[in-house]
Length: 114
Image (tube, rainbow, N blue to C red; front, side, top):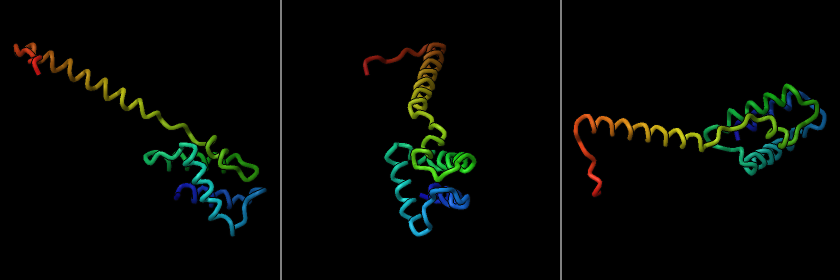
């Protein structure tokens, strides 16, 4: 919850209309964290930088205290996880083609009985 807490502190410094009082900011932080997590925007590897970027955008543009949905809209999109697997598959295929070429040059035939 570090990135969300830090972002909320930055927003508090702006004194925006509609901001929560200091007494309820801990609860506000918990609600925002839950909203980000439930929206599926909390990936361990990339969440903090994306949340920080979202809060930076909110601090630059907000005229009123934002809702968690405003943070979600301001956050940069995460890279789809499937692209990593496609790259792994391509690298594996390239490796197999390379090994087949080397085996052919050495006169090694693959044992297909296994």
